[in-house]
Length: 143
Image (cartoon, rainbow, N blue to C red; front, side, top):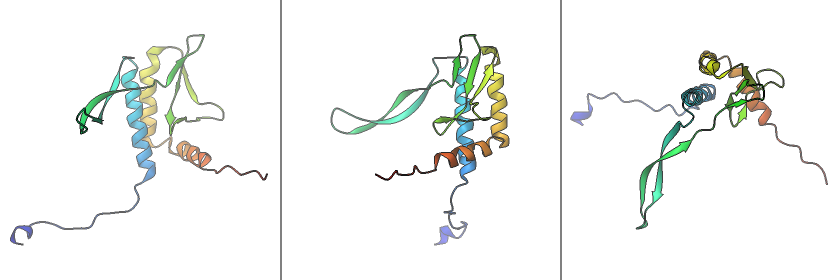
């Protein structure tokens, strides 16, 4: 026990994580990926995956993971950026899920603006409403 006298001991906090901060950090990470995808459409993520080998064992390999863009171009040449969270686009206003820009040159500054808003917590309320709307169970109809 002589070697342990100089250490500080404590307990691990097993409380729930702050889900709002977790969601915010995930959205920031995904927006930064979209920002990297904007100038380079061939941008891919590198992930580590366990793959079975020929002899029956498993080994770690680096694999390329394709990244789906969150933008679409309409027939007039306008760019529509949808910010997705939880697999669904965030509805900024009633029925409006896209940020419309006149051209690709405004994509990166727009993503920077959205990133600043997410980091400041301006989209937390929208995300909370989206989660609550999704958590409503479907009512079973009587047969």
